[in-house]
Image (cartoon, rainbow, N blue to C red; front, top):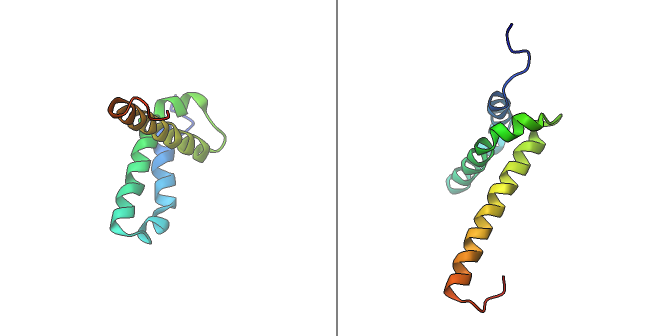
Length: 88
């Protein structure tokens, strides 16, 4: 029996292609950041597969938000390490 549903990674690829016109309108620096966002979504493809969202873009956006949250926490920890009295 073959798989009846596309993998989440396949859905990500399809979504990225659907947004390719948007990407083409970005500056080179913005396009690099855009590509980084899609990589963030790919890091959580397994979790997104488990969630099986009706709208795959929701999983993409939540994955990106999770990666941004992790990055923010790392930056806050760095600031705190440099200035223990900084608000955190």
